[in-house]
Length: 106
Image (cartoon, rainbow, N blue to C red; front, side, top):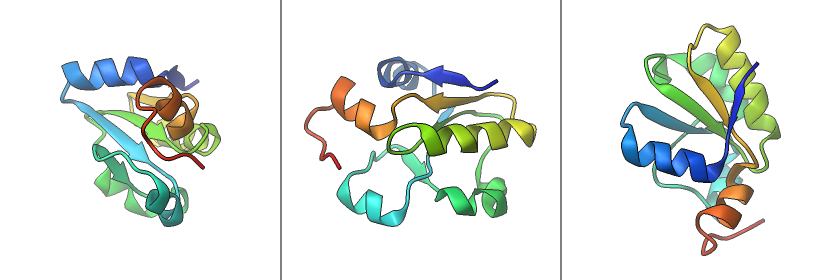
């Protein structure tokens, strides 16, 4: 089972731990609306072919718009042997509500 991390919890963790990667699995058109600078972008359907870009030594927190696609990717990464994977609960929509209300919504 993949752990859920709230945006607030992730922001705190990110400020204290450099061994964390935010993986944004949204589509490019979604990034045109809003993106987080600290996130590494790999669209969901490209993840299986781009695993070498995801460091298994890091804690990987996966993000999408609402948390559904990212949960699937987080489960996939866990099944591939990534030891520390979490889903950003509520995705960027929750990040906008909890952390940064100045971000665009869609």
